[in-house]
Image 1 (cartoon, one colour):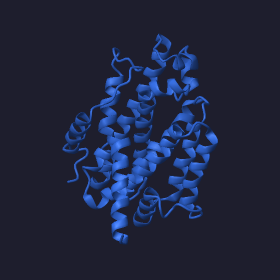
Image 2 (image 1 turned 60 degrees about the vertical axis):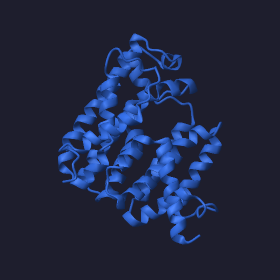
Image 3 (image 1 turned 180 degrees about the vertical axis):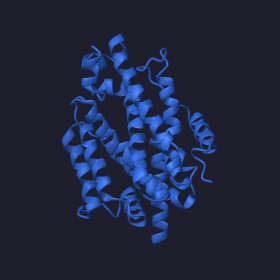
Length: 288
């Protein structure tokens, strides 16, 4: 197969990977200019591979080995398999084409090492760092692909990442409880008279709900800041922040007192596309 054919196949592989495992980000790429879509999907496919490591291993050590391979790939020191890995090939292409900072990608990998273990998230500061280095980094890197990096973009991306990251922690409560993992900070739980045992039990108690409400309020606060800062970005860079419309929808649902946060909830793909389409036509996210 020709080099062009190999590239097309790798790009298609990344698109399908993201569509299957991270439909929110896949759907958001449908609202950006096609020349940038391929690189965005490469970035999101890379993130999908990193996040899925926890689901693919039963012990931390094999997970660490897989994550180290990605770190070595970014550093250019991986042994074997890079040429045959379509996600790695597409990611390295995007890094070169858009001068993506390898340090940010490596830090994203490093932050997800925490996911391999069952240690509880200790403090709000630790959760903020995790969300900033993962979800926040993705927002900043996506903006660089669509336009360019800048101090206003990085500042907004951090707040966007905290909002999205906190919402993700709450959305994953049922799954994390089944694994005896706790991403809700122990500090926050204990402050509200709750603890890890409540989170692992997989049901709401009044004290646990107080802690979760506080986390939701923090997420909404960061989301409000991020949306106020959108006007400082170029129209192209704003498109990188379009997933915030989904974060707003999810947090508004979570904030309702009748919502059982331990009941699995999956937003339909139609609702996802509708939310993104409506947001794309608003002044905050329009490209012109």
